Image (tube, rainbow, N blue to C red; front, top):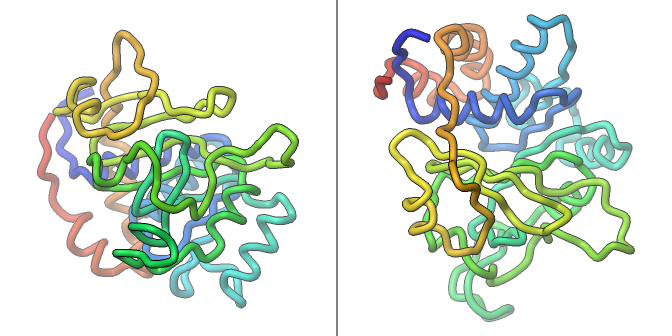
Length: 252
């Protein structure tokens, strides 16, 4: 492939789209322009292969099939009709537990976050939950979250079709091994190494002897992101489309 220039956000969009391969229905929550772009890109790539992918973005009216917001999304998940979802967290630990509540001792928290909403419910039901936290630091990726808003694992006797599939940050991609209940380093983004990931990660994880670099977007994929996908996402996140999907800043 010839040298191609891309932005960090475009690398993440391409990476997420790869993690959505084979999913029939992708749901994206509010305030999630990068996952939203990734879902639309996965849809475009699937269409080129003659396969249909449904994308539901719960933000605004475009690509939002639900008239009653979260309640319809929850009903759809409960019926097993959503294959993938994105979930963030102020803290994430090595067992894929997510903290959306606050920092400190409950109930006298030092810092209070917006709250869990339906994260625990969706975490239990949707088979491929992709954790996403742009900041990759020991402040965010901790040994143990202060409060478990949504648990990454459950006891064997608990019926749980859903759960964590991967964790993507500004530095790397982790896959989650449900049988082991821990993460494994899958790839590092350009400019990062296995050592830099270890230095900035607060929890323990598995690491192969050789860690590949995260695949960059091809010229064809970049054209899709800045073309059809960009036009669609501009209806939902006009500022993101205007400021991010314009000129490349990383050159390979």
